[in-house]
Length: 118
Image 1 (tube, one colour):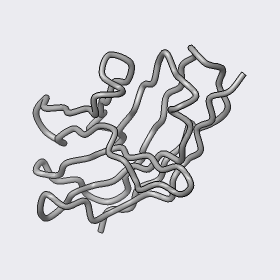
Image 2: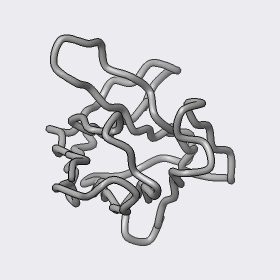
Image 3: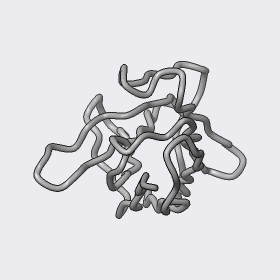
């Protein structure tokens, strides 16, 4: 069974950059879809970006296109989210997730806080 652990969150000024990492333990199969989500208190968890574990297909929510880049390193079993031109609205707890059996994400990390503030 796959376990996920995020790291790289923190406090950054508006316009700054941050890179999140998601380390996966256990075997990752080529059909897995990996994603990043975010959540602020009182709101539903929001999809941010996704990538297939094999191939180059990626997907982004409209609000982060051109600013965030999702990538992976298969050799390190790690997924990344490079975030640039950060805005206060990007403040949230960021979660990585995996869809291992179907299109539904069924495995989640514990989350890492990202705060964008001056």
